[in-house]
Length: 74
Image (cartoon, rainbow, N blue to C red):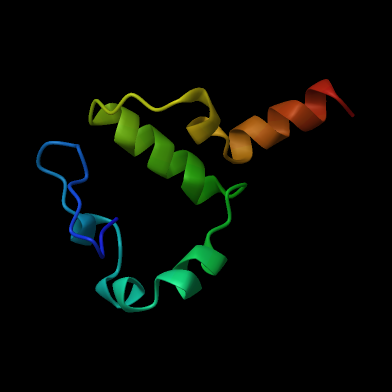
């Protein structure tokens, strides 16, 4: 989305605020580096929600979520 110059949909937030510009040149490489069950995913979710972005339930599945699932279904 950043490479296509699509808006972030969060007022005052630009892609360069949280994505390194060199990732924009190689989007497939950036996608392979994404680890959904990482603490940084939870931080990103919290940050976006603090900026007023309403995320779908599936978008909030980071390390917190997988840890809860492992505790619930050992």
